[in-house]
Structures are given as structure tokens and as C-alpha cells.
Length: 252
Image (cartoon, rainbow, N blue to C red; front, top):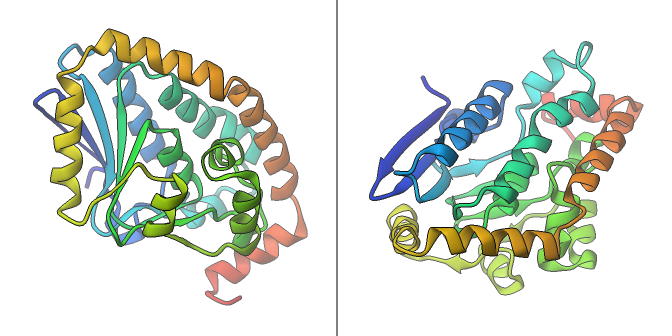
């Protein structure tokens, strides 16, 4: 089964994270496929807008903890971020075509980072946003430490990292974490918006995105590097090892 599904219709490329049995948890294979699809979309003149979503009832629950655990003895968390999520988040932010995230359910950890790096976030009432990381004794990465407080404020971002509580869809909409909350079918509604954007001035969109990115997140690359350094340190801690054991054993 392909972990990433791709469909191009009316100028809109829909990329679907396709691991519904694991809440679309991210793997090295899935990250590589997403990066490759974005690189191809950037060069394909038929693609005018990209829509990222998740199969089933989830957007993404974050990185697959089982894969993390299997590679823990051989992979540096810092190096892992520098070669996977950091370039992915940077590419999403600098991609000069509109990118929409359609969020049907849980959106957590690195999955939240991907959603935040998109230009617009459209969610169903069932969507839930969890900063994550804390349950595993880790720090926010994938740009979450910059992009989340930029949208909802530093105090709120810290609170929901420290508590690991979910942010429901209505609250997320009220705070500006998502752009639209749709009560109709999520994918058709998001695709309709994407189709409208696909008919717009693509060159102007790209230049406007560049200006907004430069104005609001000029230090993103530096923050991603800092996140990788801090995650490397956190990943070596006894807290992290104990937290992973508890997570896999499904206990507190």
C-alpha cells in the first residue's frame, strides 16, 4: 500500500497521507515521498495549488513512535530532523504555490508542524490539535516552536505543550489556528477553495508568499536548527527513554 496518494484534478494536486490504521503516523518513507511529490509539483505547470490531507479520520498523529524506537540506537535525533522534517518544513514555507491542509481529525506533533507550515488550514468539527512531544519527554520540533505561537500566542502555545491537552476545532478557529471550520464534507469544501485559488494569479501568489514569509518567519531556518539541537539533547535523556517505554506499554 502506498503511504502517500496523489491525485491531480483541475489544477489541484491532492496529497493524502495514507496510513489510516496508524492515524497517518509519519515514517521516513512517507516523509521522503512527500518531499519528492512537492519537488515534482513545484516543476509541474499543471499543478497550481497543493492540498495535503490524511486518509480516514486523522490528519497525522506525528512521527511513528515504533519506527523511532527501532532506530533509537543508530539515529541521532538532531541529524534526523536536519535531513527530514527541517527541509520539508522549509520547502512548505517557501513553496511558491498555495498549499492547503485539510484536517479531518487528530493533528499532532510533527503532523501539526506540517499543517502549520501550510498556507491555509481547513478543518472539520472533529479535528483536534495536540502539540505532542511532551508525552515522549521531547521538545517541539518541525517548526512548531515558532509557527504555533505565531498563530495563537506564546502563552497559549506554552500551555498546550506543557499540558499536552488537545485544542478542539472551534477553539482552534476562534484563535486563528485554522482559517475555516467546515460542517459540510471536508475534502469537497477544501477542494472547492483550492480550485478558486488555482484560477488566481499564481506568480503574484508566489511573490506574496515570499513577502509574508520574510516578514513573519525570517528566522525559521535558525529555529529549525535550534529545535534539532535541543531534540538531540532531549532524546538522550532518561526522561525520554522512560516516556517511550510508557507510551509503548500504553501506561502513564
